[in-house]
Image 1 (cartoon, rainbow, N blue to C red):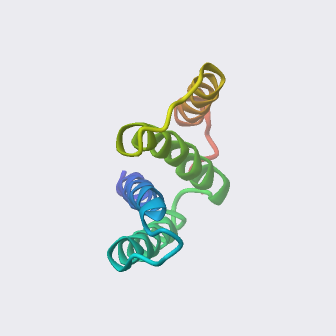
Image 2: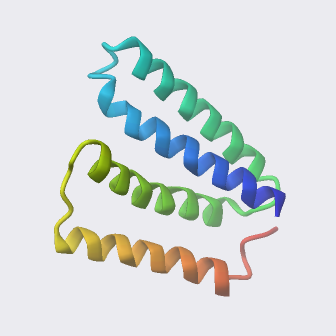
Length: 110
């Protein structure tokens, strides 16, 4: 359970860093740039802790999949970026994939 908490922390740090990345304006804005760098560093550190118990393929699939969905949602609210129907369908499929991995896969732990 502890390793899934590490994974969730990694996902949230990566989501926060990626959302802040747009505000860096190509790393010309210091505060968003620092937030982005620290967020990615924390994310990779927590992901490395996750890999002690969860297989790399499963951890990465969940990290990237959930991160994509959260960044898309934050982009909608923070930056007013619209999602069309194909984008929403794709995000729903990503969520379905993460659910399938968590419910049915026995390959998560090693």
